[in-house]
Amino acid sequence: MARTPTVLVAGAGVVGLATATLLATGRCADRVRVVVLDARPIPRWRADALDPRVYALSRASQQLLEEIGVWQRVAEARAAPYRRMRVWEGPDAYAPSALDFDSADIGEPDLGHIVEDALLRTVLADALGTAPQAQLVIGAQIESIDSQPGEVAVALKDGGSMSATVLLAADGTDSTVRRLLDLRTAGHAYEQSAVVTHVKSSKSHEETAWQRFLPGGPLALLPLADGSSSIVWSLPTADAERLLAASDAEFLAELAVATTGVIGDLTSCSKRVGFPLQALHALRYTAPRVALLGDAAHTVHPLAGQGMNLGLLDAASIAAVIEDALLAGEDIGDLKVLRRYERERKGDNLAMLAVFDGLNRLFGLPGWAAPLRGIGLRAVEAADPVKRLLMQKALGLGAGRKHRVRWSRAELQA
Ligand SMILES: Cc1cc2nc3c(=O)[nH]c(=O)nc-3n(C[C@H](O)[C@H](O)[C@H](O)COP(=O)(O)OP(=O)(O)OC[C@H]3O[C@@H](n4cnc5c(N)ncnc54)[C@H](O)[C@@H]3O)c2cc1C
Image (cartoon, rainbow, N blue to C red):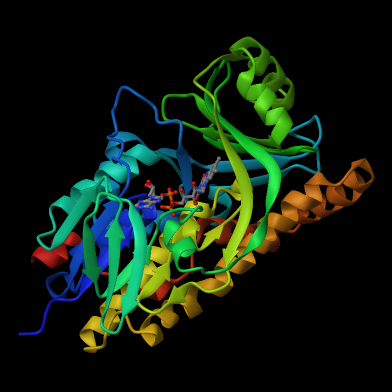
């Protein structure tokens, strides 16, 4: 009897777990084994603690999580909708050049949701745990990879080894798999770091995602379910290090100036965490029996909050490509199968990376460029169709549609 094909997923971040769960609970669940490896434990979500790492998830990401059958749990636990987005540059968030995106203008209830990393990973790991042919191995760090005809073998740091039909690398921006296979990348460090924290304020966030472009980098205020706001402040590295080391009072004083009072006085903040920022794109997403996904394939500036959303579209795409290949009786590790995924995702990812990179550069230009930026922003604000198009794009509507048509859990059980 032929052996059941095995998909080995490196990395139990959200992208790795989503890919594994799609495959292990999807239309080919009985035709494939799925094993997920991670070096570190998955943080367990707690109702009484807010994870400092949150994502602005697009509607497309929400739909994917609905299709996996975990969105309901996310929404019931803690997901904060954001219904508006206000983008501005100067000291006045309500200046004529400020951009205002309102979900009501396109007949949508919201523009997306802010969700904690630990919550997403908890619900995905639980869903994976219910799949009969899935396994999650924690404490497993890949040290070497050997691709042979018919299988790929990985050796682990603890001396163990595993073999599979295909290896999907969702092991993040510093991907070990990408390095071991010598898959080249293009990109550059931004010489910026993001300072991330949650703040409490005297005024409501009004379910609005606020984004101010400052000369040193963008500052985002994302609305959270408990009324506080998540701060993602990208700054030149030296400034970020200074703010990470500052006292809470000093940090809040500088942040208050930068936020121009849009959420009122800032009364407290949680522990601050820094993330060095870079743009990175793998020149190839595939090698024999291997494919790169999520941040391992592409890392974008967080200014538009799209890195995770792009990674989840990768997850939907590779899962659909593998399922189609299984149904057609093809070898799921064959390079020609994996290239279908690469062809589908690479162009979109590269285009998004270029747009975010360009925006960061444009708003980093000195004062002389401010009037030009103002003209551009005012033109977008005045042009209704352009604004609508940007909102549709941010929601992720229309992206990868055919790969998000799946069976719901109820239909699978019927
Ligand atoms: C400040 C900031 C704010 C952001 N905000 C947003 C946002 O609002 N919306 C959005 O869409 N995106 C956002 N992003 C981007 C988002 O964080 C990333 O795109 C996303 O986390 C990538 O997920 P991933 O699963 O590919 O990788 P990761 O989350 O990095 O997960 C990789 C996993 O692989 C494991 N691993 C690593 N090496 C090995 C190994 N050798 N063996 C086994 N396991 C290994 C790690 O332990 C980890 O669990 C933001 C990024 C930053 C820096």
